[in-house]
Length: 262
Image: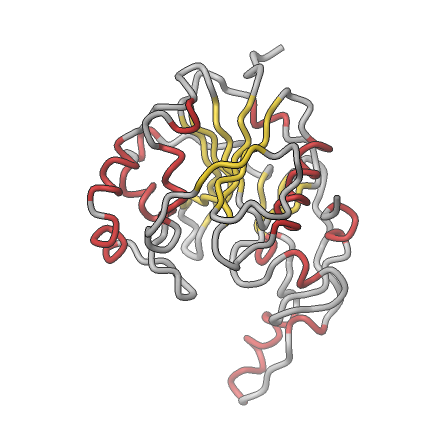
């Protein structure tokens, strides 16, 4: 049997109005249901009101651009953890549908992250889920915090986000040092669950005559398959948006109601 990490520190970040305490509590509940490895759940936040009592709360770094606070995991002495400790960072907008025990595999690796193919078929990092040995890769935080707004101007995000921590990680970690969770464990709702099928293919055919039909009007998003564990809702559509109806030209996803709850 492969060696496993005996204990994990699960971390999420919440600030501003993007996510509610209720959504963090749901994430915590899903982790409890699907992770058998002993663990503790932390939330780094500027507002702890409404969080479940068993969530360990920590102050969020202030006055950072965009997703800058999420780089805090790489800081020296993060949460008082040492080199024998492992941190798993989870975005709040995930739906957990299967076992998370794979997060404790490959204990020899200091840093493991999700990857997904882009439109060209090249793999890129996806920061919704990553695991870090505490204290490793400290340069990622040190270089960022030395000039946070200057770095943000070089690595802007999308949808109004002034800093992409994902692009920063790609820049700061040598590609030879990239290690990944098994492909297929962590999937994207928008692309991997066929949330926009099949209308976009029809639109490619009829678009030349100026016609189009909305993707979300056709059926439902596919269910996650065997072995898939986490569905990431990266983008503007979140799990609660597709609980009972289509949203933003994305299909209704009934599987969300089955898994995304306390």
